[in-house]
Image (cartoon, rainbow, N blue to C red; front, top):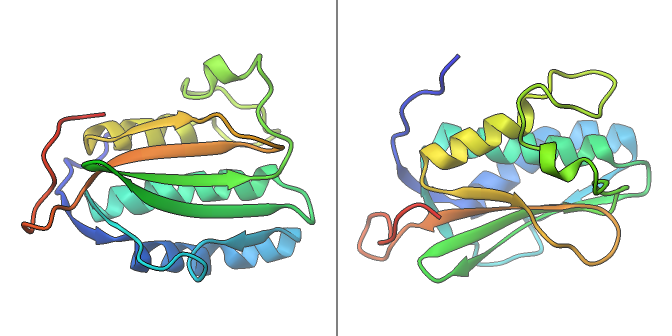
Amino acid sequence: ARPAVPEPARNDLGEVVPELIEWIAPEAQGRGVELSGAADQPGWPRVAADPNHLRQILRNLICNAVEACSAGNRVRVGARPDGERVRVWVEDDGPGVPDEVRPRLFEPFFTTKPTGAGLGLPIVRRLAHLNGAAVELAPHSGPGARFEVLFRAWGDDGGPAAGGAA
């Protein structure tokens, strides 16, 4: 199925991230994984994206991170302004992504999980692209993985900040 044509809107990450964390928390707790991001970052930035696409992008990344972790691991969500963009990240201290898997991460139907269709990250990439954003497996110090999405910031003038796709 094709994703709907995006309808960019103002999204306050200070509202979206806590909502998603609350929704995913029971699964994380059931696995013994600590999920954080909302309470420990004041002043979350605003991004220009279709609200449904934004939620699906972040939900897929957070769920993937939780699924990759074992009991005692942590998943953190954060964001910071980056010029006319906002860098949003989901990082974990799980096992990380093996080097041989990295080139295929965003390939449809590729998965390292025993179950699943291998569509989560390709969907994330497609939705990000439709919203003028970019997603990558970012360099990360320490164990685990860090995925970053570079969204357009919602400008002070009441609309998306200038600048094309990342």
